Length: 156
Image (cartoon, rainbow, N blue to C red; front, side, top):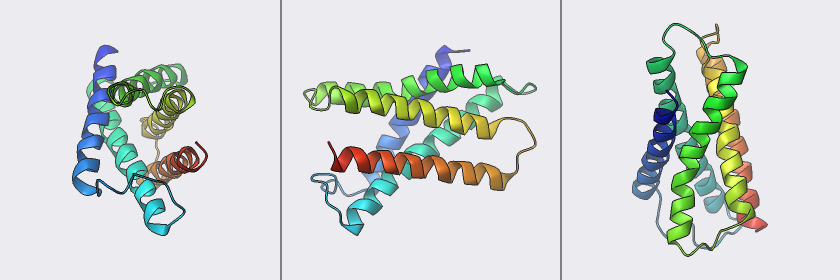
């Protein structure tokens, strides 16, 4: 039950990467600047990654938790494993890119993906949460991811 979660995390990151490569201009992430177009690009990256997480985590819950809602401890464990799977792709890309982003950004990125996965899972529980609540939670996760991307881009 837990190995598929790592795989779902990796597949989610892979799907997000493919969408980013197709939808976003390849030259745009070169040098950070406080321009509207760069900030929109950071928001687009955060949106693509968090929506991919949302759909893969939703599918995982539908597959493995059909009748029982995961408790808080399970959500923490599931989110951690999914976030590790998601981060594994980014770590491997950084490794093949010559480890230029090693250290705090890699650890911070892993912690970000774990935390956002936990928040998404909490919003997807089988409790009587409405679609509006889930969308608001997704918007919050996207905004937090955007803030992280901006902070890493401008203060790294």
